[in-house]
Length: 109
Figure 1 (cartoon, rainbow, N blue to C red):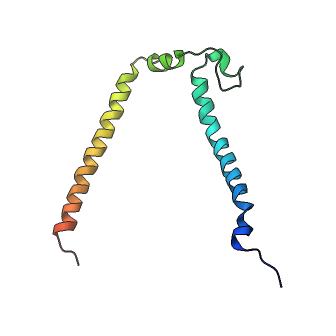
Figure 2: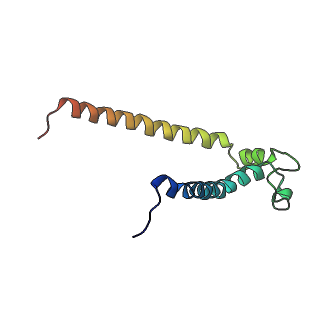
Figure 3: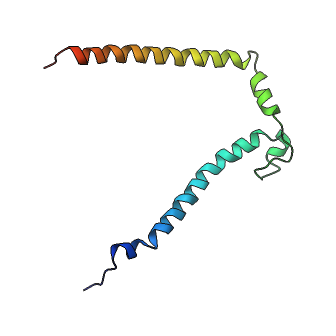
């Protein structure tokens, strides 16, 4: 017959191992986002020549170029997105309110 360890002793070494694996996975998944944010503040010449996360020279030119690169200002696209989202929210609230009224007042079979 096998001698089994008590439940707490059996898990005492697996729990830290699971935490280490989860933390390593989280770092692996977050690192590209952190690198992307870091690269957005680097000049274009430094983006791939400096593999570190901290930029040697800090610049916001990438954001300025992204905002003004097209014929239209980015404000136009921002306002369009805001109006579409506003319409979706208002439509959803109205339709859900009417459905809620129907469920509250009408008797279904």
